Length: 341
Ligand code: 5GP
Ligand code: MN
Image 1 (cartoon, helix red, strand yellow):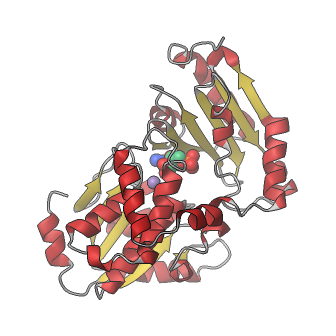
Image 2 (cartoon, helix red, strand yellow):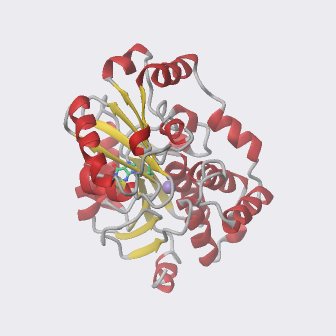
């Protein structure tokens, strides 16, 4: 961080702080927010963590998650709390996103809030809305950037087992359990450090991955059996899921997590997509192998972005129209997606 000394000065006395992360937060978004929140509270600050939507049930065990102000379609109480938190905050930390559109209804509120903003993120092509930036695309997770910042602030002695657990959850999931190509010696060293500080790797993996409901497994089975389409001529695989499908299996927030990876696990496939109908919009996930940038694809055509090999977006078209748009784009990328023999 360029102006670290200024941030240190700002944090030298107790402040009112709000932390916000992206819509439908994943373990990195929520883990880094809760880890940072606990650290800041230990330093004497008053902290509110706000999420622009609900979050998956499999993250409810994260230490501190019960204090999260999660916006809800059912009641506007959390929105009132969130507005107050942002208006009163002297510092707003923006974690695991760098495009304001990713916090949906909170974008304008955060942008206009009088607080100093601190962005901590690892996504491509950030927007310039923050006074302080801890940003690196080389980092596999936002959690590790939070850990680095805590160290830079001299806060290492404050990192307890709960903070280490929250950060490990983010690191583990954003590296795909240390399998993705963002896993380097740095990530492994950090994992080791967090374990030494009290994170329990098998317990965290179990709490995040081994908590399927029968209906989620059946939804995955159904989607793979009925809705997976493989296009060997463009090394592409995709899955579409309609609202009726989601209803049939009573799908919950987070149930779709990881499903896109099945497409990419097929031998020879270099691009995988998942499109599902959330009702208000079609949510899209992309994954790729090698040089094909799904960040470019999502940003140019689907209102989104992310990383080179993992990105997401959305569409206001119908599911069928969204799929057609995607299929019509494939020939443009023929060179990077050669037929798979
Ligand atoms: P997922 O497909 O798992 O939802 O997301 C893959 C990656 O893309 C994650 O790093 C996520 O933060 C990012 N991402 C997902 N959806 C969007 C989106 O709508 N806009 C942007 N800018 N990034 C997204
Ligand atoms: Mn992340």
